[in-house]
Length: 420
Image 1 (cartoon, rainbow, N blue to C red):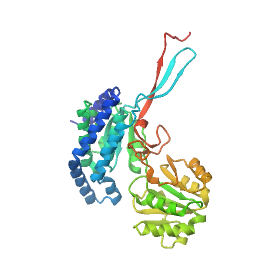
Image 2 (image 1 turned 90 degrees about the horizontal axis):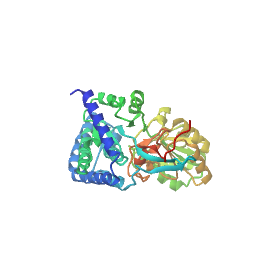
Image 3 (image 1 turned 30 degrees about the vertical axis):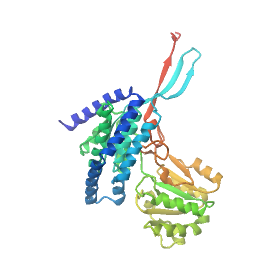
Image 4 (image 1 turned 180 degrees about the vertical axis):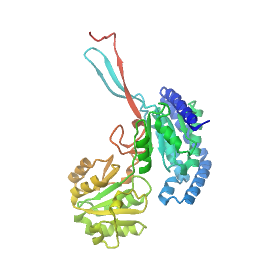
């Protein structure tokens, strides 16, 4: 059959599955999620073999080490995927939760209650764990989903998806509740963005600038965007130096390929002469390249001179931009100019300055005295995340199951009619 026909069938099946999930009990959804976790573990060797093929192909194509790190699975990461499924199963079901109740003078009772969005299309790059996270969070929130992963992770995504579908069917839920687009034809993405004859209610893209730009340009349905992480860490003049050194090292080097990795270090000029040589010595010893503005290069001449574009780049590698700023006002000015609105942090022992930073920085996540790598749904207690939403509408920050819901109003009366 044609691609158009095949995709429209996918949409129709997803809509039917969503209608079924809307009335599925919390117990059945949790049972399915636990069955998925069991299937992930029992098919780990198959998933790892598929992932090894993807990694080999990625090396052949010349993908960066950061991209390959995002792609690569190992037994520990497989177990983490399974554990996340179990964590999501154990969480409170957001469907049916009541936001508010009230009674009007005419005796009508009003209830604002959480309901599923419906069918969610998810387009993402590189990370095969997103296949499990997205499928599980959509199921928990009563939504059907249509997944389209990147071509670099096709084999891994298919292997993980097979485990998810097995868990669904074991629990009596429709296999179409979690579908994956099998073809690598990019035209399939275009059809998904059109909504598949009104079967798709929301598109969630997770990836780089080009992916987000295409989705926002071509989508004919609502988009919940997850943009790149141009994350900043500002070391204030009132920072504890030892604490700041540990935090910056973790924020940059724990995993350089995650969206919560710090890409730019801002240092208060009052502390720069003491702090910059120390952090340079610590990071460069681990193979991290520092690129600084003129003030940073003057203090530590071995640092490379940064271009303006460096401060606008999500390196996803062992590269750290450095800028010397004049106090909190300088830090806020730099972040306002360059941040993508993902995650920004301040390191200071001055509570007033910390609170000013937390209030003033308009990012989805703002942190005091901790690593930006806590920008993760699991660390927030959400079990997992579909991504970090960097917009301002509907959901912001880590998107978990509760953020994949909308609401409706239920009215209960006893014969009330409106007067003429």
